[in-house]
Length: 113
Image 1 (cartoon, rainbow, N blue to C red):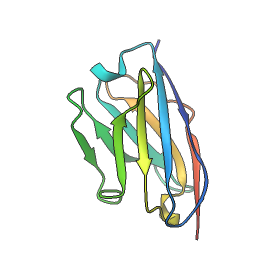
Image 2 (cartoon, helix red, strand yellow):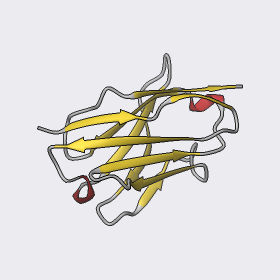
Image 3 (cartoon, rainbow, N blue to C red):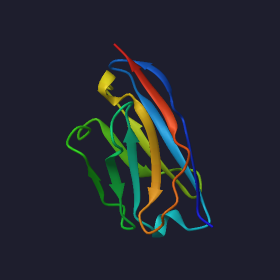
Image 4 (cartoon, rainbow, N blue to C red):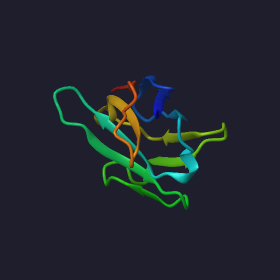
């Protein structure tokens, strides 16, 4: 069974940085396309970034140039490095293996102005 656990969220000031991590079990993360999503209060969940099995990243326009998705240093993890953050980045962040239906519980990120 696929399980995903997001961590690393918190409160940061505008212009600051955070790194989120997704710990994956039940599948080999490096062999799967992995996505990060986010859901802001009162809004629909939106796609943020993707990394393919070949480690090719793609990003939503709203985060391009500020966020970096990568395979984590820890085994079977996927990270999301977030720089130059702004209040519009405030959301619950989720990771997902594209082939599978499971979602993690997410991690809250709050950016203060």
